[in-house]
Image 1: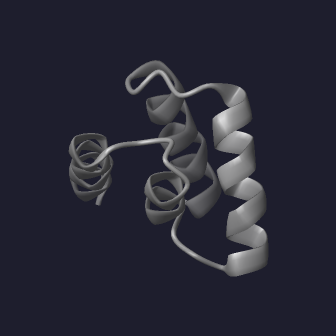
Image 2: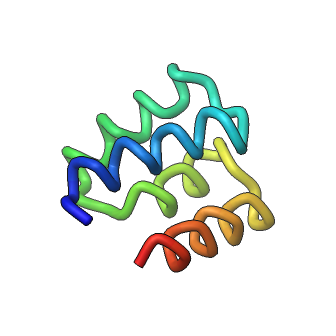
Image 3: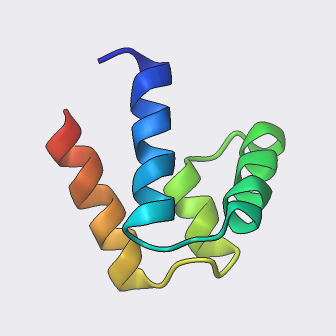
Length: 65
C-alpha cells in the first residue's frame, strides 16, 4: 500500500475509531516533522492517547501490513 494512502487511513482511524480531535492529530504531526518520530509514539508522549489506545494503533498498523 502506498505510504500516502496508508497515512490517510491511519489519520481516519485515529479520528474515527479513537476519537482524537483534529487539533490533537495536527500537534502530533507537527512534532513528527521536527522530531522525526513515529506518530503513534508522539501521540502517546504528548498524552493524546493512553497505553491501551497505543496498543490499538499498533494492532491496526500490523493489520494493514
